[in-house]
Length: 230
Image (cartoon, rainbow, N blue to C red; front, side, top):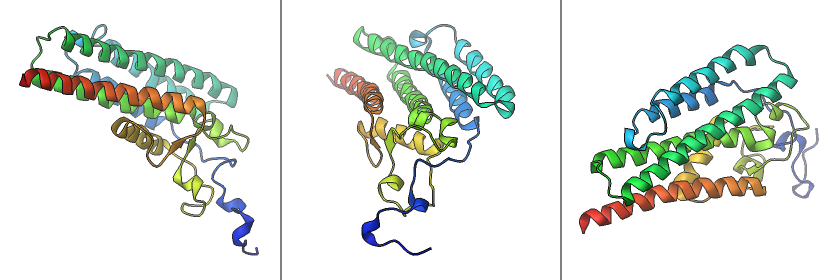
């Protein structure tokens, strides 16, 4: 094959989307849910939503379902599982935001919790936010993990460096779960995109929400620290 001149644009081997990605295991998402459930145990009862065992039981059911169904599923069943995953993500997200609201109410209303427990609660909610939005990005971009394995998957929602600079990654590179978890982590720490840019309006909205949640946690901690110093 003749080499392409600089003005010819990327070759087919350098294109980073529009080609079928390698199938991914459900285990990264399952481990993220398990991590979320384990972190829920660090939340004080005063800001926990519902009984302590609610989230672990739901997570165990989801992980068990994915383990039993996904290894022998067909494409139409994958769509059903995809919708189920979104339902669980929505529930986990509501739990995360609910804990943040309870934390804010506790701080603004004169919390009886010690400073160490408040700090632990804030860090726990922040870590849960990183996990749940990592799963959201993984389920959102290019139609989700199942859709990305087809050549006619939707256009990308995120612009990764390997997409912006063809040739800096392996041929036909495609993001994996860790890449989406990294996007979530950077959005929660920088409160903005870093090396991966949102392309669609829904991606921008989700990054806005994640940054707002993390920024609220920081503001609450700073406000509490100032109140203690005074």
